[in-house]
Image (cartoon, rainbow, N blue to C red; front, side, top):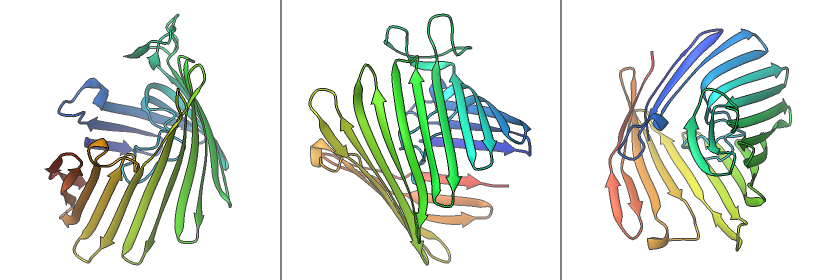
Amino acid sequence: NQLIATSVTADKAGSEVKLWLNGDAITTDTFKFKVWIQPIDMLKLTFGNNDFNLNQESIDWWRSESKAGESFGYSATITSGAFSADIMLGTQSSKDADGNDVDAVGKFWFDGKNFGRTALKVQYGADFGTINALFTADNFKDMKFGAGYKGAFGPVNMWVNVLAFVNGGFYKVRPELFANGSVDAFSWAAFVPVDINLGGSVSVAPGLVAKLSYQLSACGIDLYINKGDVTKWGAAGAIQVRPGVRFNVGSASMEIQADMNIGDKFTVDVPLMCNLSW
């Protein structure tokens, strides 16, 4: 869960700091920061935690596995008209030269033995929508390929990603679909990922994250639903249901929710979120 997010932006430079809660602990892995400069209009340089992706859902803002960055390192964004490219050389990798799992942050993309995380994303936008593609690799052992499309169809905005994961062979394919829209005071959004695991016996696990909202004059009412695998229920797979209310207090926007997990056990948390802008 995200605790704090702050950002400062000027015409040619900016910074961002995010602090996450991992379970009940705050660790170095949950502290993210980055700074960026834009020396010329077509070039942006970033140092710190890079987090660009193909397309990201706007319900939880992290559930798509199309993240091309999400690593500490250096990146450059080149923009020319409707075309853009992101190139990242990360100093963090999840694989060493022998393919063993590691998660260390170093100073360099290549330390003489291991490579960090490498990522490339290209994108082109036109009247028909936006198409993009990505490639990522952890020490050139664990690789990911992806392609995406984003567009509007009348009152509905949608995007689709298709991802393929490779480590000695294709071990997972993951199509992702997101759509949202609104009618008067009512709005909705839905994210449907499908994990197709190819290692050993083939298995398919479709998921669903949805949010319904209704805006009144004094407050907003939300209903959030998260089901990790819609084919499993009860003890095999819980469902998260989170009704909530949004309201403003001065310059602060507040949100209080009843976070319920329903499975073989029933739990309820009541988080309070506050956003300040000035």
